[in-house]
Image 1 (spheres, rainbow, N blue to C red):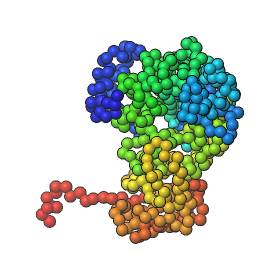
Image 2 (image 1 turned 90 degrees about the vertical axis):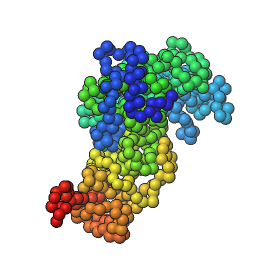
Image 3 (image 1 turned 135 degrees about the horizontal axis):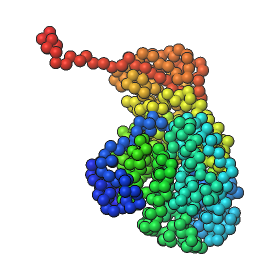
Image 4 (image 1 turned 135 degrees about the vertical axis):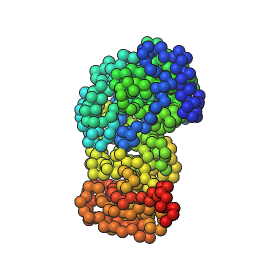
Length: 522
């Protein structure tokens, strides 16, 4: 089950080739190049446009967005409502033997889930507040370079006009948000992303079967009956998983497909089949696309590794991604969001380590964007309009940063470790060998001392020609000595939160004596 993650690229391609001729391409046309060895040799998992983008948005919105309306503001609820709403402590055991708060809330709001199951929530999906143009306008103002919907979450509900499943946003909601968003997002010059979380559906709806009351007519939503501990999806599950994914690729030609977890538990065959189909379709479309994954689904020679609400604590050679949310993933009444300052600092730290941020926007149940979320995105956009030069199109510098505030460890969900960056914390990015940026993570005092750039160590071996503060025309005073690079703070700053100094170098050259005779006889 783990060959795809451990094989070297050439061996991996041989594996894909063997799969290609094993008779599992019957759902594609005779002219398809799916799974061919030749077409996969030139895969570039991190095209320059993605390396340059740094910041994107996706949206957790669907029928479940309305589930917590009317919930107890003092109670804690698990995020996977479609799973936890069936855990009554009897038919579906819980750790403490009591029903989950999700079960209690659902029963109070809708009725016993045996009669009023998850499909009852779907049947009430209300979309009157959705406006794709307003969404795209806001995303563009935020400074995002790619954006799109959560196309299918764990609940198996398609946020597009699907023919592969009747459980879709056209049949229940009367809209095709994927089509509308693609049009408006691309009109703003952004790339289009769709995310898929439906590998976990096999586990997500197992409690629904254990709780009982599901009609066989609705197995196309809940999956075929199986035990709670089953980790082996059946053939129907694999077929429908692929049908939905393939349909989306063909209809919307997304620039990025992002996968949530549990796909690593499915077969190598289905994963390599997807990779081959999508990458070959991209060649037909004449564009470079990106695949993002979690856990061990693929490897970094084939796709972009994602850290959920986390990031490494040091730079990585391969480009990577963080998916994070300012609050809960889906709408919650009274949600508490991160501040623009927190998100901007996280973005800076990510970019300094060769990563990008995928930020979740959780709309209201009707599809409108909460004002607090809109204000947060606009504030991020204002900061990026001043300091974006130090973010977009950059690459990691010699070191990622300095200062006292560091993540003690890297990985998934390290954002739970609450840290606050200060004006001694500095992160570096570079535009070229002669231009790099020092981003100070809070308002400096009278001066900023960058200790890494002291004349006592050889980290910087080129002469500094000038230093500028992005967004300012002020003459920046500085000197470099044994203390470090000492930059005098200007009287005012052009933006809030962090501040980016652009450092231009004279550059480093070497005499090229080559094999000239004179060089050896003089």
